[in-house]
Amino acid sequence: MPPTSPKPNHPAPGDLPFAAHEWFGNPGDPWFFVLVRFRGGAPELADLRELVRSRWGPVPRMRLRAGPTRTGRRRGRPRWFVAEHLDPERHVVAAPLGPGPDALRERVGAFLGEPLPSTVATWRLYLLSGPEADGFAVLFRVHHAVADGVSVIRLLERLLGDGAEPRAAWPGAAVRRVPPGPASVRGVLATAAGVLRGNARLPFNGRPGDGRHPAWVTVSGQTVRAARHAAPGEPRPTVNDVYLAAVAGALRTVLADGALPCRVAALVPVNMRTTEEASRIGNVVSFFRIPLPLTASDPGARLARVRAETARAKALGQAAIARTAIEVAARLPLPVIRLAGLITMSARYANTSCTNIPGPDAPLRLLGRPAVELVAAPPLMGSQNVVFGFTSHGDTFTVGVTTDGAHRALADRLARALGTEFEELAAAATP
Image (tube, rainbow, N blue to C red; front, side):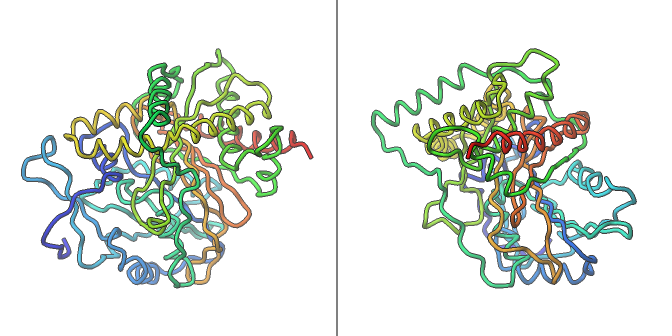
């Protein structure tokens, strides 16, 4: 193990739930991924490792290691050590791609399904290439305790940008501080009522099994912009509203053989960075719990209902309330943190997670090779066996679906249905 700082530190409040998830062996795993596809021939592994060493080496978060406690996992808190130097050979590996159009996706799924304890590495970067592949790709797999989605994009900008310091991330657009008083009490009560009511259990809700299977579909920026006009009235739905409405429509399509449940909800991460925290690498994130209108048959009606639900969550300060709860829970014993995590990732609270990671402002390039696509997805945790990720590069959006190995056919069906939903929303747009 490389030299470490003499004094270990503990995960911050926003990082702790993900560290505790692994610490206690909760269902699923707390690793998520971003895949970047490039045009051109793959670089040499040694050149990529040197780039990683020079650009990520100065970032303390990229030198974290998890270590044991003197009192054992059930009692002591997770500890992190910051290595003095980054070891690229530990983190950056090359993997050949086999023949066939699905070789990249199958290889990504194989890596996502491999256990990777944080005591070994808190992140790994895979260089994926093959003689028959059209271009190449890098897969960035990172422990969620190390970085949230905004952090990952900032790290990719640092690695794949022009070498200049990346700009600070924009503060969270959905941040709303709720001071103590009647408004905060109403927000807490409304949030609690939604939890106590509970969701229907979907066929894919259950402990994640072995293996991982990703599927994704690309959508043009023109289609996404047009889809924002599919719901009448003002204000116009956001891009995130369009994404959630498309997820609702895709789930409706694949579940159409049975009775459509009335109560289905998604966990939607929210960037909570203030102006002072805009460039922070780590977890500065909270979440909304957004009901998904599967029973609405019209795409425009689904979008209008999603817009209303997200507006309500913002008005109640739901993300700020959840953020406060995370900070308070971080001071409590680890078993309490574990229980809170199990409840949050249970089907009763949220059937799935829908992550929207804003893409980089400038095009990404790896040693002169231009990036053509980003694919991202959150981890499978708790009883969420299907999760969604949404991101962009240039004027192209990509929506991804990840399942365990037992639900791979469902991932493929959902990806196709998502592409159809975006097109139908765009077709329903009013001038």
